[in-house]
Amino acid sequence: MDKRSLCLLLICINLCLVIWLVSVQQLPMLEAEIIADFSGSGGISSSSTAQPPTSAKSGLRRSRSQPNQIHQPSRTPSNSNDSSLVSNTFDNHPMGTPPTLASQTPTPPQSSMHLMDLPNFVYLIDQPACDKDVRALILVHSAVRNIEKRRIIRETWANRSYIDQTPLKVYFLVGGVSAKSEKWQQFLGRENHLHGDLIQGNFKDAYRNMTYKHVMALKWFNEKCAHAQLLVKVDDDVFMNTPQLVKYLATPSLPEYSMLRDPNLMLCRSVHHSRVKRSYRSKWRVTYKEYPNRFYPEYCPGMAIVYAPEVVRRLYEAAQKSKYFWVDDVLITGILAEETGSKITPLQHYLEQKDVRKLVGGEADLEDPPFLFTNHAIKPDESMTIWQMALDRMQRPLLTQPAYSSASSASRSAPVAPSANISEVAQTSSTGLS
Image (cartoon, rainbow, N blue to C red; front, side, top):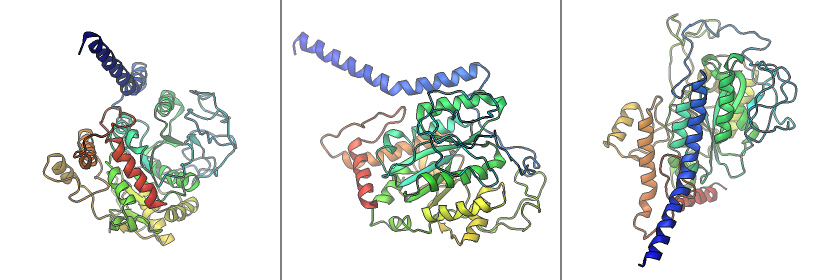
């Protein structure tokens, strides 16, 4: 090779490297700048997490007029399809005119301004309705301050480079912030502007308001994604095996394929004969006025639940008429499930913490047995390791081929399975679910 050809080759390599650096590193750098900007101004820290109230009595008494609402909106709710911060249709915002990231145009209302006992419910941040090819909507329940947990999920099992090539859609659900936390609202707006995956309601983001968030998930699915086959409700400290879900949706020979098409599906690892906490020392204390019985009915722990659309509709309609009870999983999947005749389908394979340690330590295989969810409180390094295992498993069938294409869009931190393999899975899913 002569010198001229060698120089051209080096130039091409350097150009490709620059393009890769810009595409891969730009988003993390922007996110880091946002966090640093708010941290420097006394706003937030990337390691901040929301904490439940320590007082057993906090949140038990509610005003029946406007319980826990951040502000009084006008009669025209925000339903914007862009990634703007909040609608400019709010008349009495506690912080004055809400800060925006882009010009906003109010759109006609498409949903009821009613969420249980909240008569003026609106979405402060909203997303477009699901595309027709979405087969499973995954709504991650997150706290406003759980920045790091959302980041880990975006870099692992909800990585857009993978998810966008499957029939899955992932959004994060959060509540509102008070007027004293304006910088948090600004941060959420910038986070949504960066990722386009937040849905925010105008109830206070608090431990004892989780029922509002759960019912908001049912509401959003019922009104904007009811054509999908499944709603998955999962907490932000759980690892969800999204490639395994895609496999179940796309493979008619698997028993899970038929199970996930059951119109009465409410899938979870259920809790039986759970005693109601009455001790004043317990943060889960429930008064006799709130719930008089000694034991709860069988219910699904809120960390991971899979719903069929018909079950979502029944539970949402029942919740709209129900008295508020702050233990969301007991109310929705226990009390209201009994009232509506909704039965729990047992989730067979579920990774407890000891199983996660075995898997990460190389003592178990990713598909022995296959699983959809881990237990809660999974560590970031464990999530990263399991996700890398899933990527390796997806790439394995292609290793015998002479060559394969790289992913169509690079991950911001974790590597992504070859696009040919992912596209094949997504195409199979679409064919099998039509």
